[in-house]
Length: 75
Figure 1 (spheres, rainbow, N blue to C red):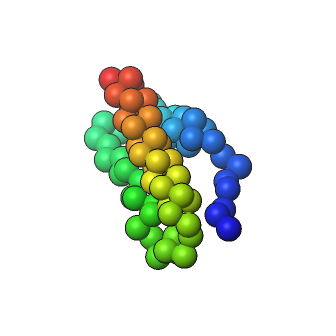
Figure 2: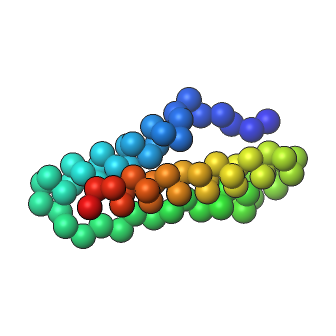
């Protein structure tokens, strides 16, 4: 069975954006924000059906894309 988090993609992205904005307001000027890894490549996903692996990969791509868009809007 796949674990379903209670936090939405939008909440994850907003948390990342708010953290960077807060750091900026305290003087930080250089940031490195890592993308989420391809979730389907993790060993604990190997036993899942292909549809669940694909869903996890779509979710990670969606979060990475939305995070990049939100962070670019800060500049």
